[in-house]
Every structure is written in C-alpha cells, then in structure tokens.
Length: 103
Length: 202
Image (cartoon, rainbow over all chains, first blue to last red):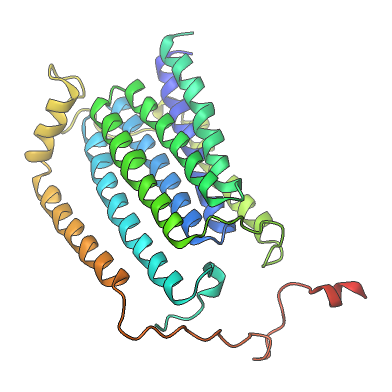
C-alpha cells in the first residue's frame, strides 16, 4: 500500500467511525452514551481533517482540529451539566423521558 | 508493507473495535472504556500522520479529561447499571438507524473510490506547509497566533460561556420539585408505537 492509498484508507476509516457514532447516537437512549457517540463522530472528523491537511500539505487541517478539540471540551462540559441537572430532577431518566422542555 | 501501513492497520482495528464497543456495550462504563481505546488509537494515527502536537493534546484532553469527566459523572449519578438493549421503543428504529449509517459510509466511500486521489480538491499549502522546515509544534503555534488569532480569542470566550453555563446548570435550586411524570401519550389518543405483551398475545 503506497502512501497515497494509505491517505485514502484514513478517509475510509474516518467515514466508518463517523457512521458508527451516528448509528449509536440514533439507537442509544442513555444520555451519557449519546454524548460519547458524539465524541466518536467528532474524532472521525478530526481524523479526516488531519488527513486532508497531509494530502494538501497544509497546516490548516491541524489548526481546525485544535479548535474542534476546544469545542468538544465545551460541549462535554455543558452536556454533562445538563445530564446532572436532569438526573437530579428525575433519576434514571433516559432520552425518551425528556419530552418536556419545562423545568 | 511499510511501517506506516502496519501501524495504520493495527490502529484501525483498535479504533473500530472501540467504536463498536461504545455503541454496543450494555454498561455505560464499558462504553467509556471502549471510548478510551478509540481515542488512543486515533492519537496514534495522528502520530502516524505527523501531527505530534495533536496526538499529545488528544491523549491529554480526551482520555485524560473528557473521558474521566464522563466516568466521574457516571459514578456521581450512579447510572452505571446496565441498559436494557433488548426492547426497542420505536419499531424499526434500529434497522433504520443502521440503514442511515450504511448510507453515510456508502456515500463517502463512493466519493473516495470514484474520485481516488482527486477526491480531495483545493489549493495546496495555502496557509503554511506541513513540513516547512520547522517542526510541527512550531508551525501550529505560529499559525494559531498569526493567521488564526481571532478564532483563538473567540474560543476563549466560548470556554468562558461553557464554564458559566455548566455552573448555572448544575447549581442546586432552592426548591427542588421532582417533575411529575408526563401524561401518557396513549391517554391523549395516540396509538402506542410498540405492541404490549397483551396485544401481542392474540
């Protein structure tokens, strides 16, 4: 496998990982597992960005991944805050129980 | 087979097995540990792609902070009991979800296979070369503080907002009233989406 085909293999791996995360987000109902599936999807995109950066010989791919890492950290903080607030009101609730925006 | 291809093969297996483990584990703690395997595999892939700084940041931020935070919340809330994966609340939801996933993979793979090396278009080396004589950390830092200095400042604001939001969300309110169970959708005239055991019997 030469170097260029290896780059394409990276893209294929990232696509499969993105789909795994997306399917997990659709079928799982535990909010914590859903957050983890979002992390999987973000990481797949990160891998794609770094591969693009390598294919185009440009540092910007890695810069964008840096920003994605920051956004992912902020997203996890807010998401876990929501999960904590939710389980305090109604312990053991899953995503299907959250039909009301109230309170 | 080159060293890069060998490392890629090993890490691809680790990443995919970890990803499937996140989705298919009954226990959320096992999902979190599978997530560690996936993130670590991706960090090694970053090293393989000559992104040394990102590999270090990936291990420190993701496996060191984010997954530990998720595990901490899990233990704090005591939600480490097994999920019920047998029942399917919406009929056909899983089949449709897998179908959507296959379509996503198929679309991207079609682009890669048909396009080949021309699938990635765009000008080369616009902002800075990957190996422009400097090492990865130097080049990344230089771009962050020159070309991308405004986005960098905006992320500082984003992190501040996230911290304030987390504090507001997890603040214990003075009068905690447990929310009553929402009215059953069946009482409102909706047909149930799943067959109950009684209905399935006859």
